[in-house]
Length: 59
Image (cartoon, rainbow, N blue to C red):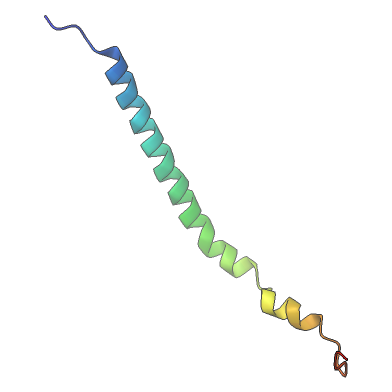
């Protein structure tokens, strides 16, 4: 009878575990992404315009 290869079995379990964790992480990221777009109305362009002083020519 053949001897079981425990190292191979452990490696396969570890790879499956990592694959499932990665899928879960991506799923959570996808769920989180749409809500971030709605909750963050400020844009970088709006803050850049706030630094400009009206009437200042920069000379």
